[in-house]
Image (tube, rainbow, N blue to C red; front, side, top):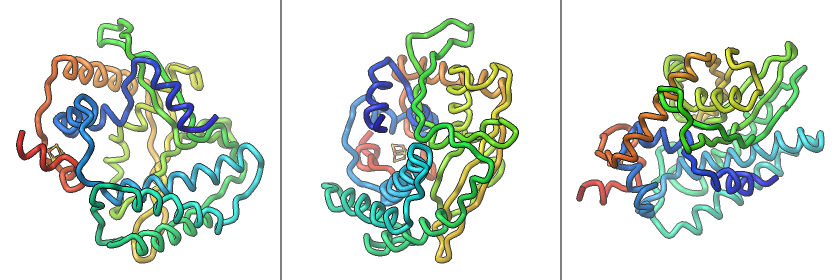
Length: 276
Ligand code: SF4
């Protein structure tokens, strides 16, 4: 099933995604602009399009291996990256915000190809089974009192693997200029959301821990890949459910306010925000 088709089917349910919860927690005003008022952003961050283009290539690589046992040649992934990014940037009717590490489209394409080479040469699936690629999942959300809400949490797991010991490993792909801290990875709510979805869909026992790994392609002059490991427990999932429930209550109560943070530099709503 195509990713967009699977996503559309999930979205037919009353839902909230991890990214919506993430946006709300980091800036509820941005949430209002994006999801309540559906205001088109005034600027596009290159980081967003760049990350999506790398993501599409990683998906193609793993999907071909899983479905056809076929190893995509590197040059095909490079072409896909260049075509995808060019299409995104050339058809954007809003200004693109470039970054120091990729100040224009050509340098972004060059950097992307270097990152893909690092990715390609780093993959080691010895003894590993691919269980899912862009795996779409949905699960009912509960109130802190344990009552089922009408809303489902929806999400797409980048990559789900099973190791030699039969343990599942959730993989999240990222691109980043800076290194991650272990504490940020341990606190990363996306992994907790994935863990919630997997447990609710009976991929693991309700009390089981879930191993997670963040594969970060670093956007450096000499790119490299870094792996960060973390674990999510049943109590992490319980806490996540409470957070999601409180976010839903706050959204229903229309509590929206600005929250200045690192997100502001890439925010497409700075103009409308300053007039708030
Ligand atoms: S500019 Fe910053 S404070 Fe304003 S909406 Fe965007 S993220 Fe929120």
